[in-house]
Length: 250
Length: 184
Image (cartoon, rainbow over all chains, first blue to last red; front, side, top):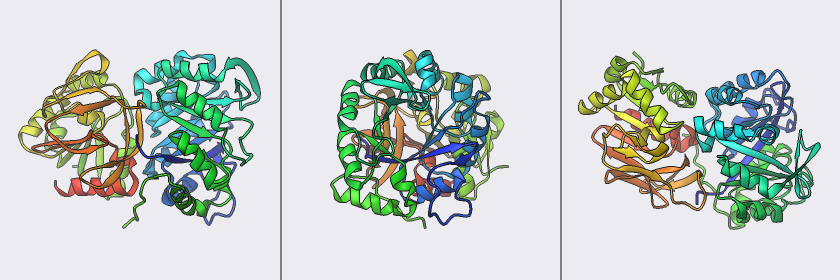
């Protein structure tokens, strides 16, 4: 298996970062491009950008952000939020994103997963699942469906998803640790990589998740102290998790 | 003329490769023009998308022929991911696709615990971790580097192909690209 991955996630609205603005010595702390570069320099293995302002007008604002990110970021990145068609996905990928993340749109139109995978490969399609108690939620985790989490993950993989981004709604933002039982259940049910999300509050939490699955999404723990990312990596490594060895820029 | 021509497949992401080259101070352009491909100082065959669509596009534009001439003339070509796989004899992807045949070997479906194989992995004997994202892998006698026992790089004559994405592999990837370009 490849090395465990640590993936900071930036929430973006109208092209600006809405969480994680604090205490960073950047010219523009609301600029997703500058923050992403900062995290990349600090040892992020990948980045995720979620457009939480996604509107019916589509992905236009985000396309510009993606182009600017692609021009400077030398690590892979995933973009989600408001992608509802193959056309939307194409615009985001051609702007330079490695992967698109589908959530509500995949539930509404599961064929979309297959269509995007056929065009850009499975590795380009992430299905994000907001998991409540037993069932999946949509619309920013506000609307419950009657779709059970594990079977939906299995269906998404069968339809061509290359990765599952699995968020525990109950743990999200709580910093009390990942929902390991949920993560294990989904990991065991699919043969594609699974990113654990929701609950990272310490190096121990992240190490626990990385013993269960391939990657961990981190948000508030790193946004509150962006300069602490290299230290967080070292703590996780000290707990026995092998991460990518970082190289200094010459 | 640009320092590097990045071959246009008609689909997929060439922006990151261009950005990495710009970072290294090299000019580049994206093109499928056979004349440019044959005469550029350095050519990159990037890789995102499906093998059949990519190969059809290379054939239709004349880029495939230009790559073969370039290879015969021993001018440098770097293949990345699918671009590396297309240089072999054939791929099992999309029900079977004939490749450029610059190198010996076949591309087969990965046998790995989780597919796609996504993430950073050590490449030996180079001793560096690079970023991989693939569901198929080369089996080739021209293999020159491996990752977890899988083919990570092939080389024959002036063609070097890598399964990983140097343009997405941060400092290690940029150093790798720089050393490739310095051979041109």
